[in-house]
Length: 200
Ligand code: AMP
Image (cartoon, rainbow, N blue to C red; front, top):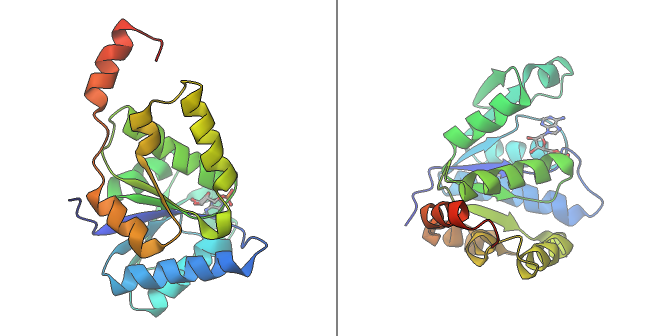
């Protein structure tokens, strides 16, 4: 069982079109506060990021932001978080978010969210970390992405064990339970085999 004292949230710096996305972000923040799980996120005050941070703080939760200086200067940083780390680059930000978190969950978002999600999956695949990763599929937002990942697996660009290491659910409590129970893929074996045979 994985201990989840902190969870990293990847989500849109925009609110999205459907109010369900905002509701899911708010309920994410509240749920983490109620479960005493620290929220680690990109430190923004805008979009779903701001909604989740505000809801977590309002419910008495702990919120830690990690933001590049450039975004603070543009005044999109959240002024009320429990702790804010200001870093110099986006690379440093992702590395620190990874270090501070026991697991990762992505909610709907755009390029930034997908970049963070796929970097955490890539790093897990290469055993830079062994932390669980989940996708909260709010109103089917990620259906097309999930279908694409299945296609990449069917076309043998993704191994089953790596495809399956992404936990998916429509219900946050179920998703958190899946993250607690998830085992990191046995990447050592995969890396050894990759040396011998590049074709998967
Ligand atoms: P996107 O999905 O393109 O809206 O980008 C959101 C993700 O990228 C978040 O999880 C943040 O870590 C990062 N990000 C993008 N824009 C901002 C912003 N204005 N303020 C803080 N973080 C941002």
